Length: 124
Image 1: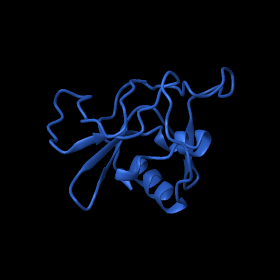
Image 2: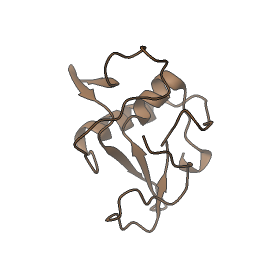
Image 3: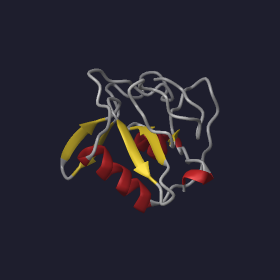
Image 4: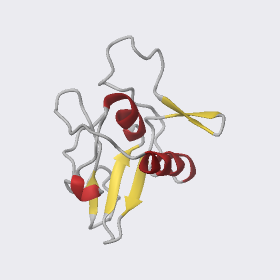
């Protein structure tokens, strides 16, 4: 997956015209990332957005390069009300109260649950 430092200007898709969009959670095994606790409430909201409001859905999938080789025989998935959603093909957009849009790949859910990724404090 493409790596972007947290809170850098979002320019992944050239057609994206969002002046206040910031990257969050575009992780790579080649770069260190913040770790820590994330509330269950936030994780629940991210799951809901991944299912109900996916953004920039792509035709292919990205696997998790943070997982040890062989750990996942398939792409990371989440359970949503009894159905499995495969991650790695879309973004999640979260708009803050001050109108900043935080753009994350949908595997951010997996990164939080399996790799203890913690978003930057400015995105809280």
